[in-house]
Length: 431
Image (cartoon, rainbow, N blue to C red; front, side, top):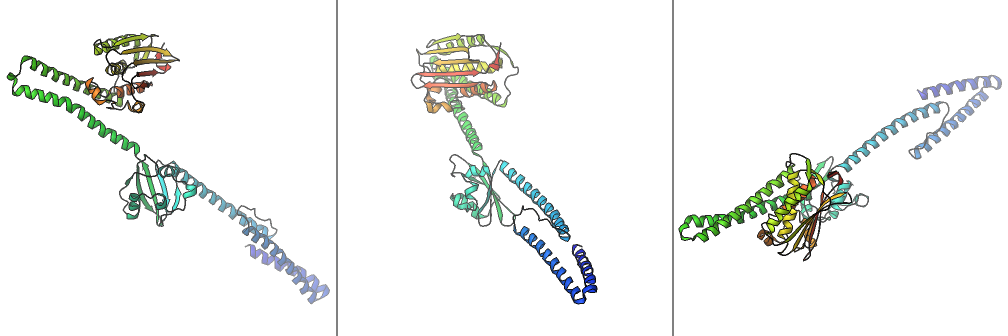
């Protein structure tokens, strides 16, 4: 269309110039005038063509040159097509950016690599999993950066239906589940998921089952042994021996009952099923009851005092709070030698309600403090069994305090005693 207009325009100019000049000056001068006009037109077109070539060779975002006549129409058409192409490129760029953001937001690490195992792209989580950097490691061979023999074998095997468990990488203490997903033309994705927490939970589950089995096996062995002994040949034992054996059986039965009760309590706390009413709990009468229990457990071997600086009322579950406070007091009695001192204190300090249990007992080394609230964790297993502990008391305390938005602080020094503080937020205090 444009070039058709140009042809007719040139023909019109030639006729317009040739006719007057040929009539006045003759045919040769008319042809000469037409040739000159055509040369001028050619120069004009070459000038615009040069502008177009300069634009094509320049930066992609440079503006189109301005033209006149047919070139104005041509540049307008080009400008429209450039706008469409830029719009398409922007749309594609936005799509790619959204795609990249989505990959970075994935809960798994992702590394894209080609058939030569060279890295094309890494998301942020994969950088953390493998201690890599997209800025410096893109283009590197995957096996040069992840050199673990098990991973290299998995990568070279070509059998990716099942994931592999990857340990011993460049990040200490991290366990990853890896799977390679082929896609496109000889492209692949390495997907990594951090399963360290799942492994720790599985280890805790195994330890829990082993500990429960062990804790129940000992008293059951005692009960079964003495029961069989008495049932097989009851008449050969004196009355005192029978009473002694029956006392041991009752003690072991009591130990199993306490363990099962603590397990049920802990299970109810973990599932949120304990405590039916969130009621005001008067601290003073509850602590006087706990003091009486601690004195009974001590059997007069310790000096136990109770100080209530500020009578208070807590919002919470009475049974749970009593269980937590009683466990703290009972532990102090069990782990304080006869003649020692145990102080039970309730106070309101800097807006927090605090129940403090301080003793002059054996104390705890610093390396044990972070693990004290784990189920069945004991600093001294033999002493705990001697004193009748189940190893679940502080785990129960932790769960109770968590349900009441409270915290447990522990200070201890071997040979000098311990100080346990259950700290409740101001919102838990009822004025």
